[in-house]
Length: 192
Image 1 (cartoon, rainbow, N blue to C red):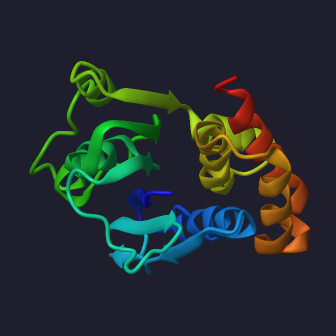
Image 2 (cartoon, rainbow, N blue to C red):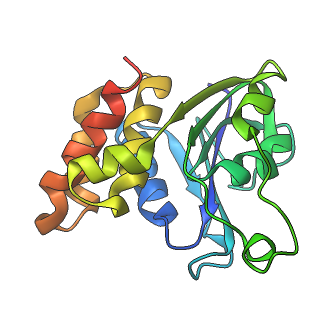
């Protein structure tokens, strides 16, 4: 199998580490060689972060270059636009509709761009946009929006939902399992 690339993008504090662990766990359980990068960027809340996941028969580096990502998973709209050049032609963008103002917007030096998702779709890009924050709150915690997006991504990766359930059990602390399973199922159902 040819090597596939996934990018997880957002801002610090949104749970990209858990998301990359879940994807890595599922892929390893399928026998793929998997490389996952560390979080690059400001891991403190508010800074832009990116994590790379590559998988296939043999993977030598987790780094994803421009035009190489099969899937970009974005926890925030502006991050979708920022990392879009990394998406390959025919790739998929899975994004939350959530907006988090970056520092220039907070200080009044810039304005948050309008209609980001619509502008990306206008470029003939496959975009799946869900209100992951609302679904996470429905599951019981706004912090579970990362897991909602994993439910969405599980549909695009076409892998058995049971693999994802097992990954949740192995990667999430026991006291948060039920909440995260609900968040995952809500995300999965959002694109069926």
